[in-house]
Image (cartoon, rainbow, N blue to C red; front, side):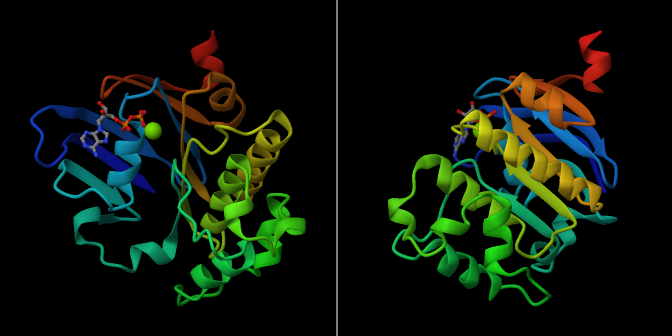
Length: 219
Ligand code: ADP
Ligand code: MG
C-alpha cells in the first residue's frame, strides 16, 4: 500500500532538517503505528504522506504511484484525521459531515451512520462550538471515514479521550481493518500502539530506531 524510501524533510524557510531518511513499508490491510515522543516528527510524516507538505526528499510510493505524481484524486481514496480538529464551529456535527460528503465524487456513508460509530448520534444537531475537545476528536475520526477510504491516516486519535471513548476509537479502527482498510496511526501512547498496531515504528528526533510487531518489541 505504501513504501517510503529515504524520506527527508526540512520545513520551508527553516534550516533544520526534521526527518532524516525514514524507511518503512505498510502492507495492504495493516495497521502501522508511529510511536514516539512529542516533536519526534510523527505529524510531519503524516502531513507529507497526505500530500499537505510538499518538497520532501526521497520517495513515497502509495497505491503503486509516486505521491508527487498523484493528483487530487488521491483524496477520494484516503481518510485523514488531523491532530488538531478543524471543524466549522457554527455548523452542527451533521452539517459538517454533510458538507464534507458533498466534496466526494464516489459513494459516502450517511452522517448518522458514522456519528453512531463514534457515539455522537445524540449530539448530531448540536453546533460544534458546544463540543468538548474529546467530542471534536471523535467527530474528526467520523469525518475521516465518511467516504470509506482504502487508506486511513489518524494523528493521535485517542489523545484527550477518556478510557471509554479511547476504547471505542480503537475498536472502530480494528473494525475498519477487518473491512480491509489500511491504517497509518501516530501516537505517543505505548498502550495504544500495543493494542492497535500490527507493526510499530519507534521514532525519535526524526529517525526510526526500530520497526517490529508489538509482541516482539515487548520481548
Ligand atoms: P510530533 O507530531 O511527533 O509531535 P512534529 O512532526 O509536529 O512532531 O514536529 C517535528 C519537528 O518539526 C519538531 O521539531 C517541530 O518543532 C518541527 N515543526 C513542526 N511543525 C513545524 C512548522 N510548521 N514549521 C517549522 N517546524 C515545524
Ligand atoms: Mg504530532
